[in-house]
Length: 213
Length: 209
Image (cartoon, rainbow over all chains, first blue to last red; front, side, top):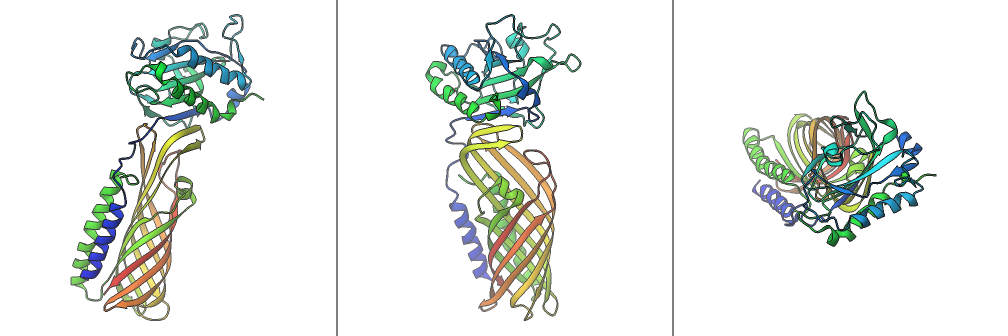
């Protein structure tokens, strides 16, 4: 009887010691998450986009991150969409785009699939309909799992301008790319640009459904 | 711990602490009682394989058995199996994808009533067994620095089994068995909806009488 108990304890001790000493998450270098409207119908029919050249900070006015690299980051996003067959109508005010692509940087820990306070951050953009205001929310795709992302997360969101609903006061979110924890707190974005560009590349690489055929 | 969560650790330590004490108490009450401690390797099947695609090397079971009649035994079983995997790749979900360092863990704790029927002798040789009871499943997922997800569920479980018992030392037998754990689909796990985390378990144990 003693033999078996000792054997059990030794076995469990061996299993335990094999577990190592590294805490899960010690060497994490960030993650890229993309969220898409799983029905896909609205996304498949969209052809034109507008992409403001500003990366806003959430919440508005945080001013904690350098924006020296904004132009390069936005240019990378624009280049990916164009490469996928989308038409950029940002500088064609007479053309109403199918979708607007907004880029933001979280300067606080956020929860959800996208970010709150979006209207306070962006204000009224010419792409919104006349009824859109601070009480409107973004319609998150069904099945998307809300989560908590870190300070320094870059968010790329695609909103369907054709399907704004005055009844529910929502603007459908068709696609989101989340580069989680890319920027350490208080970092200079210019120094982190290669990581951000890599993250953008990955977000589009894992979203082949964005390609227009 | 690289491949175990604190949650898993607590469960392992609790099982390790309880099992020998239970065995000793029950042994003192009934000399006909047989206590079996086993180490288990598990092959993930179905939903388990879709979540963690690699075998589990972390499994322990404890069985307490009493003779019912000639060649037939009945008792209880406590089991603990942990499936773990980590990698740095892209995972596709119905509503998107995720790329980065990912940790997936599935901890299955089960309590079952068991029965065994020995084909040749009263307590040795080949046997057929069946366990019926419940299992508690804890599902853990972490992607990069994102806060981890944890889902849990309770399942009714059946586990048919074949095995072989051979004399090993005085009052101690060696036991080898293969068991198919088949929980009923239940819960609300990552990705949405019910799951049935099935697995095939190969266990190596020692039985003391």
